[in-house]
Length: 466
Image (cartoon, rainbow, N blue to C red; front, side, top):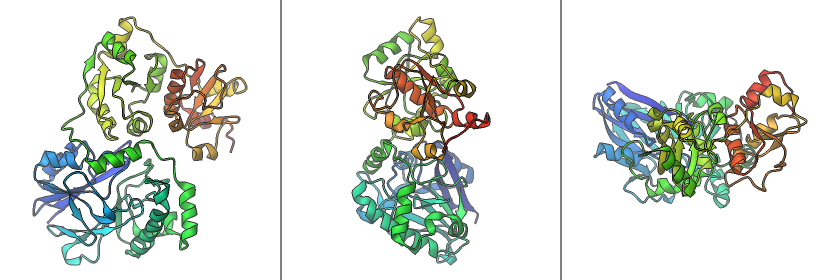
């Protein structure tokens, strides 16, 4: 027997899913699949195994589950989801409970109830068939991360206290009782808002986490609760939306979400109607050089998934401007990862077609950090990073507004003078360009983006205030 164990990392949403199985029996399972399921089918063919089981650790909040998508492609594989914590689903699942086990040759998966992040959360122990009571690994889902743990505040204030108690119990009464050599395989890595300051390594051991993970250092619940409350990042707007979508059952897409090309004049008509939201996915310098008035800039990096989910409306379709039309499938999948699958069209021929049609063009000036340093007394600086980032170090006299708090509009909720120049600042310029495009759309005329932002500012040796 050869163990089949393959991690699949989805950048942007920082999500980790797994294919596990046994090539002697030709059977395998996928745990916590993403919506673009082709990767699991390719891996199963590469290893010569059939995917017979699809497991979920919990009802996900940060991305759209691919369980139904994968099941539809396979035909016979069943979806297995937690029946703990009164979990309810509006689609067909095989409900599983703690202590249930599944064999794949000599590999055994055993279900453990690990609530805290959610009431129904389960993890899956990995063990050899003749040593089931001595697991060598655990697929931890969102209960235990590298250097962190799953946040208990995603279901609302009324449930946070109880979930915090359950998380405390899960960490102390389950994970800390495992042997030091047990390997943990979480559902998320660094960059996910499902936990505070998740470590960069994709895996760890119980022994290493016992020594280094601050979430595992508390014997007193009240101190643990205080620590949890102080470190949680802001909740993205799409998390409660995705919770409902994944409990109801995500729709089966079948392939990359469909999107039609629209000639420039037709694209303009669609944008002018106001029924769709206009998103330019080009990089900040290209967007700054020239873009369609009213567009917001969410550049086509992997993290576009997170920012699309956090900033866009789920009630309106999306009009896209892209740099390279051959990347459309990649781009639309990254929107689909967070449940955004309705597209009104893309600009056929890109901005070149828009220019050639003689249509209006706006620009977003870029202010290098050297120029900003010279003009600090004449320019308002708006820092749009998270509160914790801002507190860790910011420009002197900078004002703060987290970009996510600007999704509903900017008029009247910013402490800046609309008639004076404002330079928008973040960690690298990516979020600043997004925020600056929102300011422009809101009527601010003297707006500048700062490319490189804090990275460039520090590299240039300028002062940072704490």
